Image (cartoon, rainbow, N blue to C red; front, side, top):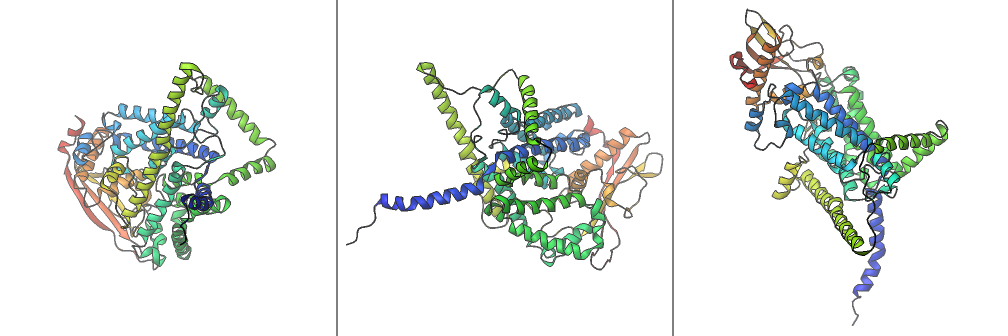
Length: 539
């Protein structure tokens, strides 16, 4: 009777397979530390740009004198966790903007990097919770990239932290010693982009314009989205059809982003980057294309960065890399000298004190293991489950759903899906003035319900377009009164002649991009509002 192989023999046979599998997985999860440094700089710059762009409508979107005063926010949203909602005064909100800007700058230069990343993420969530009506996919993606960045050694290269650690012999970040890091967090930051594209691809299959090749042409005829080159592209329908199929093909090729490694992965990532740069040049969709480009930086692995450095040394000015390293070290040393508290030295020693230090080190190490391994592993599983649930292939456990809702990490990516918009949309708000006559109080212009020559310029910013689009939806009746109330109050605050009532219209027309037919402009009255009580919200 043949004896079954022993446990030791089975383990011996499986060991090489497990090792090869581990090496393969690590190679695909690895992110170069230079990529993380560039990623960190990109995140910091994005946060500063986002704050500057939002500040153009600070009072309108984030104060009690705006379109969503706090009492309306608390009434309409059951749970609001926002520092920005503690006060409705412009000076208080502006102060939080300033604090967030300083922290974002610290993140960009790599000063107290992990703390700066966590604080930036919390402040961003707080700002987004203050007015959900102006949010877009770029906001969600930026928050998620910051979340994953909190578990990664973003400050290991090209940072003040790395200079301080070198100068003082302080303890380096876990995973920052080699050229790359391969952890659950690095896996998470890579999967985040994959999840977004794969989910969006499946949503697009639910419509008919993407599979027929007509979707991009319809997007480009929506004049409230397009600008710059986007205003010229409708003249080339064949090119737009090719762009539709190319984008769909890329979306369904997105799993290769984590299957490929090295230069092939970088080549595929570069195609996505090129597509997003094309979006930035043609569509006014705020920072979403740039956020996506920054999200692709971790996909460029060590061979790419090594080749880039060799190229700079060979074809660039003599010693350019060495000079920039020296300059960074000098600047980092200057900034580090301003900090009176150096990094914690390595713990060690002998006797009771040494034992205490080693015990503390072990405790800190255990805590770091939980933060850097267990927690990212849980969230990797949750984002995969949430993505599958959003396209009907599973569900997230109730407790997991609560966690994702709390940290705003639901994976619902329906950008231009199932089908893109088929109409060009604009808004008008005729207001009856006190001494006769009327004026469009939304644009401070003569009243006209006709289609403007360039619809895009009728929106002050992309966030205003997003806000008005949400207000125009059928389930936002109360927000229409908030908008009309704001228009009345703002007009009467800034003009000598008061407005007595306002009517807000949503207008649209449809253009068939392939036969050129245009429907007549249609209008839909959102609200007719008496301005007599418009100042109540400012008390």
